Length: 508
Image (tube, rainbow, N blue to C red):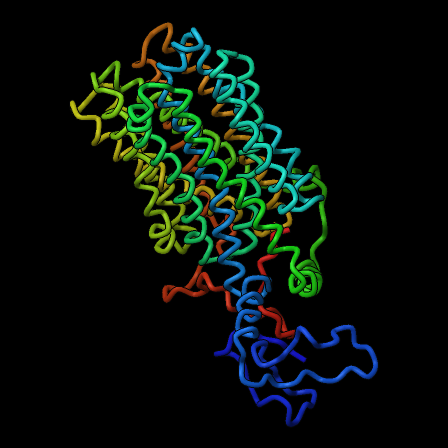
């Protein structure tokens, strides 16, 4: 019996009459929950459903949510993993926006404050080894533990700030960022396996959108929340802990989808089908299979995040001191930078070929470099224009870089988990060094030298983007380009081989 979910491709010849070998059954027509799938003798054939009752309708909706073959299940999983990041990014943005208040409360300088970002970011280097952990124990279990730890660590940060305990705050930030990087790695791995080819740019565009929503709300609300709590920075950060709780809830819902009776029944069949013909490689074996184009992209991702997020962390204080803006106006202006990432899904819909991805990636780096030059020379007088160009550059470069990453593997899909894990290790190392150096330069030479450092990083990133573009022109990248009419859409209603099973995005 061949069970197919795309009704447009089914050759439905009826159910119950001629139950021969060629009969094709619709999942909605079969009461499969009462069918003996073990093949025991005496088991009766599936029977056609009678008129649906409200209870059966509810059961059918539950099946759509729990069945890994269903599009609704994939979209729900994609939505939940997108919820992993906005809450933590909201809190991180507020910590950066409250730099002056935190320094005053803890009696520290800019260099010491930078350790709240640099040292925790160093923990992201462990994402490389954690790639093996994710492959061994599964994304659902690992993300569930990460969600619990990120909730607890966010509370530790606020408690440490309330007690004016610098090292307690640093410990909380260290655990916070370690778990955040692990969750980001899981998020990318899930999306890579749920969506392929032409659907991936749009799907990953929603990931970028979700990440930047947290930053937008954090920067935009920082001034208003501080005014609402009458300048009490501890109370303001407790508000951000409430947003982190959404991530913890999402990490609990994903295992619930995975542990249902329907998922336990269907998933083993799909896992055996998806893994057929692919060898399981260890982390060291995967690293040895990385081509040069993949290492270039890993370095480019590190430079991108090292030149963007550390600047956003100090942007509010930078605008206050160099552009004479009040905290509310500074937070409002910098919130426009991540807001342009809200259109990332639209960018992904247009970037459906490897060549377009490489060209747009280089264009994003050009925008970043131009905006940083405007910041350095303080032209024009209103920083909003430079912020808009800065945000556009990040939105274009980040979306295309993550979509290009699996294509730089040149078809070696078994190395995707390792590549994703080391991408986050690369950006963690870059952000740690960038935050630390930015704090030292600020104390010694001021903010113009910090802008010059970010500009140099963006110029190097642009050169790497041009190398990636050259590799695409030489045919080195894995160019699984789609047709101009759209090709494979996000629904992924395709059929694998001759067995009639729909293509499955397996995320564990």
